[in-house]
Image (cartoon, rainbow, N blue to C red; front, side, top):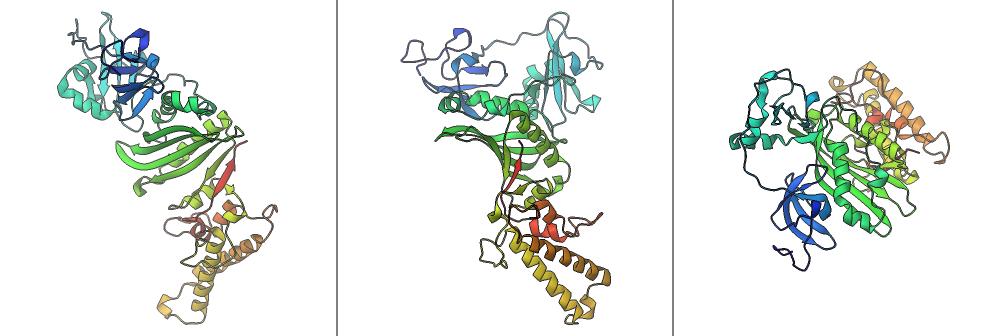
Length: 422
């Protein structure tokens, strides 16, 4: 792309303004800003965005930001602690972070407002004009990474359907990438999930061999601290059916049990059903994944996912399947029970009567479950993942300090599951 008008091809942006390399531009309607790095007649303008991403955008959706010197305000209003974001012309926040900001026009037409480093602490309020026009403050504000958002109390916006955000052809993947990404950011990145927020690390839209895919990977944050990672992959098959793979979700131990996974998945499932997705597929295999998804109502994808009737071996690929793990747990408890009953272990190491009774009860449940796994896969009596997960569970039992047999079998197990949405 030439730096002067009249080259082989040069884009014109919003209202016909020439776009050149190095121009500062804004994505019209979204407020996202960045710097132009190149352009192509087919792919559009390549923009390096201020939030870290680099994507292509259609020229007509870009507005060149004209540099203008700062003009001091005609009047600086006195601080107004009673001002609320509900009266704002624009409101800024970031999910998972305590700060926010809002601006409004005063009676003289000047832009004014406030920024709060902690919205729950009135002593952290700073004049908006001081922050955004004083270079000494700008670095601190940039670190907050605030994003424009609806003011508190604003009715929710109608969200895009996922049916429109998974590419249906190559043109969708090539020319609507930015539009699709912004719709996902609006729905997921600019809200909170049980006090947590997410920030996209990777986003991709592709179409090949009659199959459309939209993928995202994001870091999970709480209170400004990184708490985990999540990945989701959305599919459109050749027959136009839509489904999603829950590829990965991991939280640091200190953030587990605080409600993120439940809030995140409930929100997404509502969006899935509203958009007409057919199913969710999962492949648990990390930490407690196999147990968590079982308790959430996922079913075996097919009979092969449950595993063969064989004792697990260290060099076996099947050792993490549920049936071999169940057989291994039964054998371990039988051996433990026998050792306590035939006095082959020191008296000081023998288990108490209450523990032995609990082991016998778990063994009885586990053996009965193993026999049910010999039924035909389509038999109504064939065990579900949730039934397996609950073997040995009793009210008040601590899953971390005293995991029951079903949880020991499924936590860390490796099986593909499905939840039907339609």
